[in-house]
Amino acid sequence: GAVVSQHPSRVICKSGTSVKIECRSLDFQATTMFWYRQFPKQSLMLMATSNEGSKATYEQGVEKDKFLINHASLTLSTLTVTSAHPEDSSFYICSARDIVAVKGLQAFFGQGTRLTVV
Amino acid sequence: AQKITQTQPGMFVQEKEAVTLDCTYDTSDQSYGLFWYKQPSSGEMIFLIYQGSYDEQNATEGRYSLNFQKARKSANLVISASQLGDSAMYFCAMSATGFQKLVFGTGTRLLVSP
Image 1: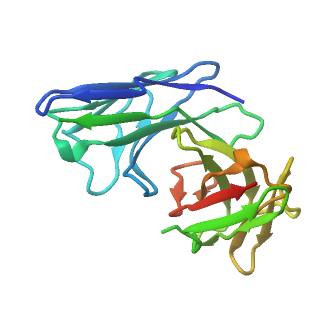
Image 2: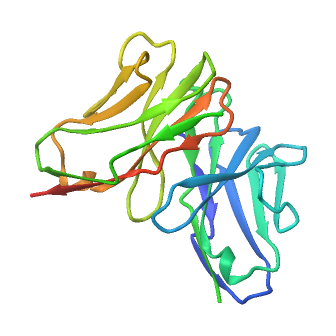
């Protein structure tokens, strides 16, 4: 299957600083990538849809100025958590769809990033 | 709006036994896809199986099969011959055709015992 690489896998940052998370599709092109957030022992909740070359579409209740998403190329999307606070501590995971995959509706996920804000 | 319901927070099964994880869904879309993902403690989401709403046959992938009952809006995952490595969280999810966002259920934690 296609590979999505997410980096870093773990990050600890101080309150008030910003953190950037990268999501790369390694062997396919992804016009659309998705960013999810998962609190401990809970389900994945979609934060935003990232479209190559255009602005991201945010889900209701997600602060777009706090969670900056950039999708500059067909293989890279980034999520920046700005002015992070302890309540932003969570597991963030991206996914991408291979536009030419045989199983075209399958989404491939990155390994996830566990963010801890202290 | 789409909704996925997984009513089993936890399931236990003995090694080599089969287990069924329940999933019901609600959608007004005529065309949609149903997915099952496995999430081990490491956090990665591992794709298991996919069923399209117009697929007439139940999907199968190795030890995984999807019991799709469209009229009942259910898409249960059946794992045959459980292995210790199957212990993980399992999420049912759906999307509208054309693959927009995935909507996930709350998950079922499966524990396989020796």
